[in-house]
Image 1 (cartoon, one colour):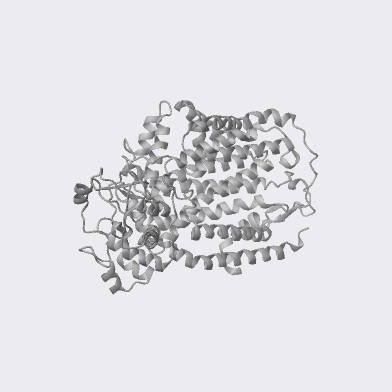
Image 2: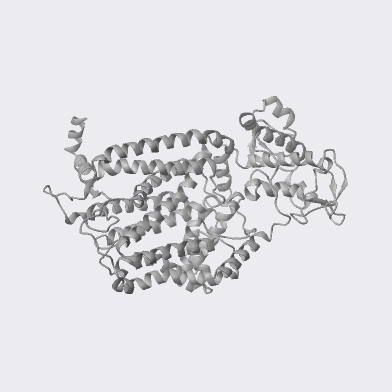
Length: 227
Length: 403
């Protein structure tokens, strides 16, 4: 009976795990404003040319992340037509993108909720050089992905066996920090309320705990005469 | 205050209502943990109505705009995220509370004479709540909403004779789209809340007519004092209002912890695939229902024939309605019915296991256990008429034992 239950559990785990090769790795950076700010800057330089995060308006970054308006203008608002009150949308049109890459690069606002931070971090670290692909790139986590390895200049080029065949601008450890920051930035865009939730959480919980304690004392006082 | 009350009382039975339903409504003094969930259900209902009204102010029911309007609530509307998380958390916790409330009824035999009608109204409330949850689930029009909408309406389409017509009435079209959302919003925000409100009121009226059962399952109204009040009863107000207030406090701690620290609850309260917009060309890898409906989905999938599966599904929902007439034992509480107590425990474990299977991918290895569990579910109801007549019972006290 127990052996059969165990076999059943294993079968279910196997079905869940089948899609996950290579194993997912969590980003090695903390979720905080400083990391998100760094991620935003890398994202603007390397990703925002093709990918939108359309639900994030530029001016919310001044409120949420502590950027000054000038910093947002100079470090993030690269696409033409960008406006502080508008969402982060690239210059590249969906029509051109489809013609060039085969598919339009998806909006990434909610990507971290859909796939999880670990998936994004692992995906960005799983590119390898593959001369058989039109772009010259392939991905171990997402085979035949249309996206080229845009981070190659900083993280270097790996071959199919995972060996570094060309060094990048940064050391592998530094590159992981960058990819981690981009991942955390996308975790932020997928739910910006997280910063505010975690700030307000202790107050809200404190209040209801206090309420519960007072209610308990009141209950005890009222019930003293019930035998 | 006194003059105002007198003015109102001459025109409306205000003081009479307060007296008969609160200050002189006597409830057994031995209510335990299981008796918090009725008042908590009322609290969640009110929370859902208020947060729902706020969400409705920003929601747009159309296939093109629905998903975006929900995102704009999350990103652009001030405190929109808080209101939506309260609503999604409330939806799941409503079922947590209702399931515990129903389990209390099973444990202490609260469905038995004279409370049959109270029980029937309660189960009807549960069925309405399932409908309410389903219609609400489709509204954000994420990809899971869309495919959930497709799957359930196609289940309805498989009902013999009237199914096709009923499904097209529900969808308002041949597929799930704008006409579906416009009528689902009418069902979710008007029809079912109104129905729920009326049923809740009826449930409370019936409760106050027959009085509460209690963990011992003995009738406190059979032992009255000189004033004609139950000896083992205490006025609902202030005793149970203050006690329920404490329950509310503990519940709110759990509620706030989820809203502020784990609002999606690992994909159980807000499904992961619902973060991508509805896409008729892209089926999610697995279409599984919300956790609170998962046991029924497991039952449906356990049967290879669609029509039979739907028959089983309806039977599973109807079965609890029949409980007062399946159980023939005069002893109410499972405290004095050891065999029945074990039956309830197995029944609960069966539902939990079915729920787990309902949320797994449809793999063949899970089919045999699902069928065994399905059989166990019905075995509870089918064996009850016999077991309840033959089972040994422990002596029931004349009055309620020390709490």
